[in-house]
Structure formats: structure tokens, C-alpha cells
Length: 190
Image (cartoon, rainbow, N blue to C red; front, top):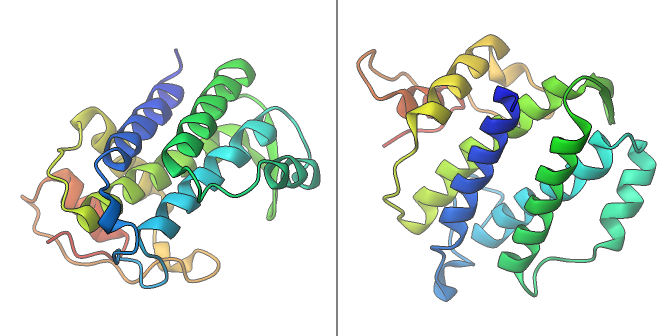
């Protein structure tokens, strides 16, 4: 199996494990992202998983959008929606592979690059969710090390369109790699 696919599946497992820890009273709780509570963060990841399948299967952005829209809102059963969306995304990725291109709002993008961004998003938002709900689940080094290496290649994350990231937070050289990764995104790892 391609290493990127393995990392993607590992990222899905990490997010899914933290999703399973959410208690009923935590859905409206805050996250490190000022714009999202726990429910909105989970909805964001469900939505991303829903898009991946149609896009890597070769559908246009418009067709993929119609397919995602037809799935309806996830709010009534977020755990079930995550399971369905993540299983579908994993299956589509395993079938389609990483050699093609996907149509994104910014234009045609190599599938491998898109999946790398998805792995990054899964990993960082798994951390966000864990912080929001008080999870003590550790991240596997075999996920964090390659994601950190990938993010370092992105350069200054504040240059991403839409100001998605704050300036990097300084983290000591001897800090755990997960803290270094999180610091690059402008989040304070502690």
C-alpha cells in the first residue's frame, strides 16, 4: 500500500477515535478555532471526507458538489455520518490511487498533493478535537513524523489563501514532534 494512503487511513483512525470520545455535553464546547465549536469541527471533517470520494474518482468539482449536497446534513448522527463518509473516502482512494488529478476550487491539483493536505487536516483537527474534549490519546509517531515533514515543505502557512493559519508559535527544539507540528499552524501546543 502506498505510504500516503496508509497515512490517510491512520489520520482517519485518529480522528475517529477522538470522535468516539465526545460526550453529549461537549458538542457545543469551544475548540482552538474561534469560528468552530466541537460540532462544527466534526462537521468540517465529515464534509471533507464526503468530497474526497467523488473528487479522486474523477468527478468534476460541480458534480462532486452535487453528490455531497445529496448526502444531506450530518447533524442528526455525526458518528454515523463520519463512519459512512470516512469508509467511502478510504474505499475511493484505495480504488483510484494517487496518480491522477482532482479538480479543486483553485484548479486541477495532483491527487497526491490533495491527499497530503487531507492528511495534514485530519491530523491537526484530530489534535484540535482532542484538546476540545480533553482527550489524552497520544498520536502515533508514524503519523506525526511524516506529517511534520510534509508541513515543513509548505513553508509559511500564513500565506495560504483565506488566512487559515496564524503565525507559527515558537516551540523548543527538544519538544515532541506533535508540539512542533501544532506550533507551525499557529496553535499553542500547551
